[in-house]
Image 1 (tube, each protein chain N blue to C red):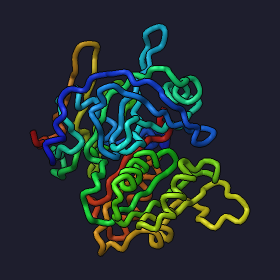
Image 2: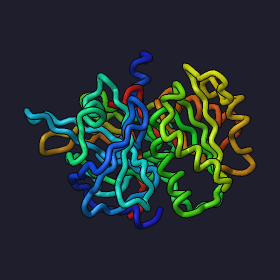
Image 3: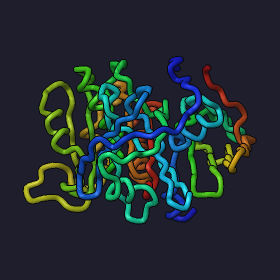
Image 4: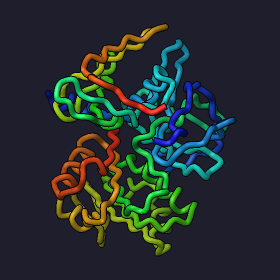
Length: 250
Length: 90
C-alpha cells in the first residue's frame, strides 16, 4: 500500500454548501467548499455529523461523488424519511449553510486509475455515488480504461446522474453504461427491467480471463447478491470489492 | 438471524472513520487474521454491525466475532480477541 495511505488524525471541519443539485426527487448532491481540503481518491467517503439544538449528535458516512480533480467536494445523498441525517441534508440544508464533516476516509474501495485492468462497476440506487467519482476521475484524466457500469434503479426517474452518464457513455472512449429498472419502466424501455441476475451479468460483465477489477456498491442485499453471482461465474473474490449501504443508510 | 438484522449488515468501509480515530491511520486496507478460522481478510471486507451498543465486527468467512469496539465520552474499549493478527503498513 502506498505511503499516502498514512494520513494522520482525522479532524472534524466545516464545509459550506456552495450548490445544491436535485438529482432525483429524493436524491441531492451537495457541492461543498471545504477550506484546506487535503484531496481524496475516487471511492472514498466522508463522515457527516449533525448536531441538534439540544446537543444530540448523529453521524453517517456518505460517499464522495466528485472526482479528485474538482475544486468542490460533492456528496450525493438519498433522503430516507425515517433517517436521522439524510432528511436534514436533502430538504433542510440551503446554499450557504455549513455542514460538519471529516475525511477523506477509506483505502479499500478506491480506484486510482493507474491500473490497466478493465473495470466493472455495479451500482444499486445511490450506491452509484462512489462509482461516479471513479467515472468522473476517468473522464477528467482522459483515461481509456475499458469500463462498464451496470446500474440498477427502481424507476427511470430514480436514475441518478442520468444525463451525465449518457453523455460520458456516448464519448466512445471505452465506457459503457447498462441500466436496469426493477420496479417501473417507461413505455418503449429497451434496457433491462429486473433485478441483477446471472444472465444479466453474463451479458454485461467482462470475461473473467480479462482479469477485471470490480466495484459493487449499494444496498446490502443487492451487493451480496451481485458479488456472489460474480464469484459463481469464476471471478476471483479478491478482485470483487464491495461497499454496503445497509438497508436504509440514514 | 432475522431478515431485518441481515439488512443491518455493513462492511469494514463503514468503520474507516472510527478506526482512523483510534489508529490515526487508514485501516480499511489492513489485513486481519481470524482467530477462529485463520482466514485473512482486509478490514474493508469484514462484516460490520453498527446497530448494537458498540460496533461488532465479524469474519466474512466464518462469522466469528473478531472485534467489539465501544466509544465512550472520553475513551474507547476494544475487544480484539477474535483477531489473531492485524497487519498494516506504516
